[in-house]
Image (cartoon, rainbow, N blue to C red):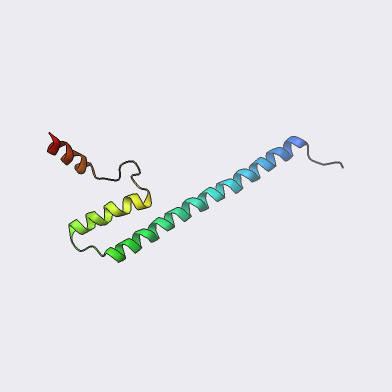
Length: 88
C-alpha cells in the first residue's frame, strides 16, 4: 500500500493528463465543426450553382445562417439601411 510518489505529484500528473485529454477533444470538436461547415458550403454551392452576382449573394445569405456564421447579424448591413430609408 505504499506509493513511491507523494500524493501531490500524483495529483499534478492527473491534472496534466486531464488537460491534455480535454485539449485534444476540443481540437477534434473544432476540426469536426469546420469540416462539417465546409462540406455543407460545398454542397450548397453545387446544388444552387450560382452564375450571376445576385445568385452568389443569395447563396451567401442562405449559407451564413445555415452555418451559424454571423449569428445575430445574418443579413447584410445594406438591408437594414434600405429599410430605414424606405420608412423615413
